[in-house]
Amino acid sequence: MTAQPEEQVDDREPLAGTQDVSEVTVGQVVLVLAILAALVVGAVWGIAQLAPDDAPLPRDPSFIDSIFANVVVIAAARLILLGGAVVLIFAGIYILLSIAVRMGRGQWLRRAGPFETDLEQRLSEAESFFDDWVEETNRNDELINRLAERDEQVEQLLNDRAALLQALEERHGS
Image 1 (cartoon, rainbow, N blue to C red):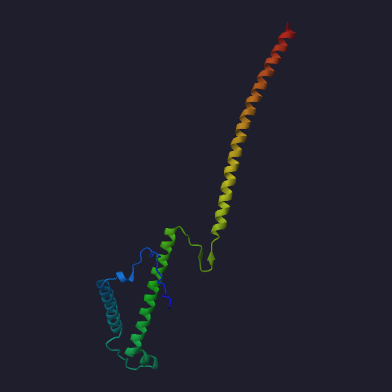
Image 2: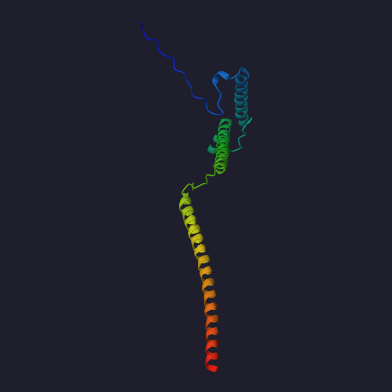
C-alpha cells in the first residue's frame, strides 16, 4: 500500500489590496491588453515621427555636415534625446512621489548625496535642553517662593525688633 500525499491547505489570508488570480475577469485582461497595444502603437508612431522627411545638404558640405545630414543620424539623435527626457521625467516623478510618501509617514529626509543631517543627535540635544530648562524653571519657582518666605520672615523680625526697641524705651523712659 502506498501512502497518499496529504494536500497542503494554504490557510494564509491574501495581502490587503491584492487579488486572487482566479478572480481576474476576461474584461480586465482585455482592458490590460488594449492599453498595452495602445502604448506599443503610440511608441512606434512616435519613434517614426522622429525621422525627418529629408535632410538637405549645404552647397559645400564638410565631412561633419555629410554625417549629420543623414536622416538616420538625425532620427537616432532625436531618439536619444527623447529617451533622456523620458528617463529624467520618470526620475523626477519618482523622487517627488517618494518624498511625498516619506513626509506622509513622518520620515524626514536625512541624507541627500554627500550631505547628511544628524537628526537624532540634534533631537536628543533639544530634548535634553528642554528637560534642563523645565528643571531649572521649577527650581527657579521654588527659589522665588523661598525668597518670598524669607522676606516675610525678615519683615516679621524687623517688626518684632521695632516692638522690642519701643518696649525698652518705655521701660527706660519711665
